[in-house]
Image (tube, rainbow over all chains, first blue to last red):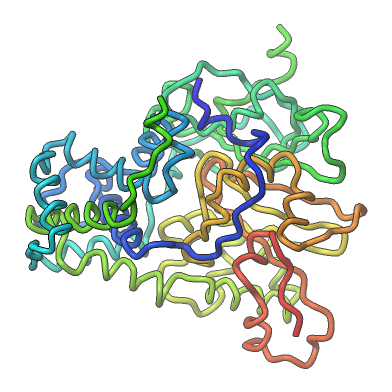
Length: 242
Length: 205
């Protein structure tokens, strides 16, 4: 059970930070660019052209999220958003043999001492592919038939699925009753098989919840919560009660 | 345990050096090119950013039929307008507009991470990624909005949308009063990323 899966509704985190900037330090832009490049070059996308890039791995949002979700929860709060990216992504390149820890340390040290040199070059088709990825995206929608178990207006119960390494089920919705607001057309995969039910193509629904059913009678009045939930996370009230 | 709560005194300098070192090594080893990161950043400066969303909202304001189409089938409506290529690209493959109207105010959150509609709004600001926003907006949105300076009457229903699957949500704020005389371009200038995620209303004329 990971705290990172249960952030929605967590109390005691104090006032919101009103920072409007996307990046608060110049270095953050670099790790953002690297993440986008990795997604664009990922081996799971067969519809983009091959390039001479030496990146041969799969890298998706799921990989970035898994890195953040696997952190000690204290570290999750300690490290700023892009600090978590930097840790996760540099760790990935080390773990998958692209760079060694010694190389990274040596290079970092040289930069700190002001004695580093810069690298140059690279095949432009690598950047063409990354741009194409940004333009065409990577839709999870699959050309497979889907049976919708639920219709708009149906009551559903959110399954308390087994805890897994990664999830797209906001923890505060487990076991809660909601109403189907939208039945999304088609079937949607997820980047990886999470171990808690999602991965293969399935229906997705927008479900509306009454805050009283989530937070109790003292819930703030006058709002509703909606979440887009994969079919595997939902059950009919009758089946749930059985 | 207490070590965990210490930051190095040169925290940013170390991160900057590490990021630079990583980028250099990745170029050296042929993973990316010397241009890769700058080109990605340029894409979000010039092609995918809040300027697209502002243009979309301004059109919705002047054309109620378009606004209705935007609500019903967001990607199709967006495709009607003249935008750069990529409006259904990365983090925009399945966008959905939530329309504010009298008595209904929409708020977009991502309690699990930071899902954000890149083609219409570019990259998310830090407030959207803040754990306090992500946690509290699901529980006490009216109070959170008040902290942002937006006091909504108790008669307004706040609809909170948690982006937990493929949909990338954004808000079409209400058109401010006293703007009948403005051109579409002038209207677009009133639309902020905050208004398009629901923590603000559009600016007054």
